[in-house]
Length: 572
Image (tube, rainbow, N blue to C red; front, side, top):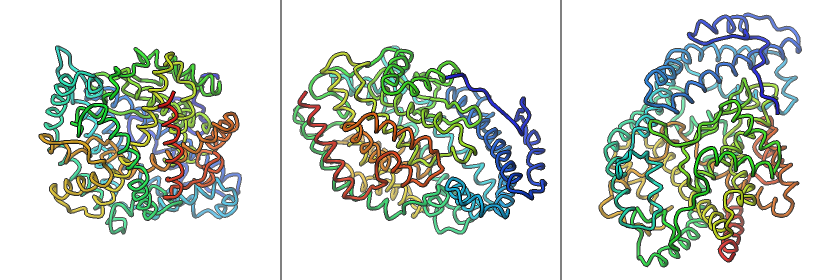
């Protein structure tokens, strides 16, 4: 795979973005241009798309650099300048472009193409939601939400002469030495307690501003606004409620069964918070690699066995410096794959510390990256702007599809079986968490004037519904009440979380198909990813060989399948 370069036909080859004035002439050109033929309209759309890709990528790099080093004020200021000074000035111009686009007589002709029909549908929603008075609010929210990353990145503990990030400290929570686990947990708890008020205040502010934004746009609440804004054309809030109930009925009992077995092996009647990650059979934590480079090399090896195109994607990213993989002080928490629409080569950011979960994150983000590569040549930037339900299908399917080749990390068969069991158990455990976070958001934004006591009570109530009740939080009740504070999505990307659950069900279906015919499943997977957002979600899932279905019946069937395989791994 050749190293891609940026190709521009409309913008200057050396175009920079220091101030809004750098791009104003391009908007003036697009908005003043006469369009009299279908050919000239398509050319106009492509040039508007080129401008969009340039701006998206410029903002992306500012975010990436800031999240790699949150301690560098200049990087934070660069990102803040983009969202507070540049984006607000672009908003009315982008709306004017959308109006010009949709008023054109050739919209009907192009809409005969499903890709354009989906694109125009999204543009129509953007026009319906646009309000001048929301421009400053959106700029404020974009900047304010990043405070979560700054607060979280500053959370470190001192342990035996070392300064550890929360990710690095959590490695000790897998230790067989309970005294050590408790010591580290209490240090982490003390550090988190110091930020409880700050995160509560931040979230309260975000909720209030988001609610006002929804009111300005003519909605009763931010939940309903976001369903429109996120383009959830293929399912409703009622379907989300059905998902919540199905998870409570079909998944939580399986998780409880797993936890009861673990408690029995530990010789305990209830977990303490520092017991949740320890291996009940007395094994040391799985250590699949020693360095970020080793993790990358072995992931490339796995991808090469699956499809050489997959491994070439990671090699290209590595060559171009589009990877930052290891945890370090000052780095924002979490992991992501950030699409870069101009160059067509995404960026993977994560916080690896040598644990099995890092392997999962690597192949997960690798799936996102492959998605970016497969749709990079689509005609318009918007065709590559994939809805989360499809994006997470790419990443979560890769987790399961790659499992067959994890012997690259685990040469010992027993460790390989342990790794698969751990992943299957985590897959089950995360579904109730997804349901709880999503249900929490529905409540938060339909009760925007709630107080902190009501917020905590609702979180605890949901915890009883989606939890197993097997953890003793005595002495740590305050951390239990604000457990939601650890979820980045609540602060930075509201309502983006149930997609993980929907996609997880699709991914299990893709994996199930691969056990029958791996090559066919991989070809369907690639075909689905190559569609970008040129087809509806049901069509994308169908192309991948699975239904877009998260009904109670479907969830029940898939959980039986996962449970049977989990038990079979345990017998090896």
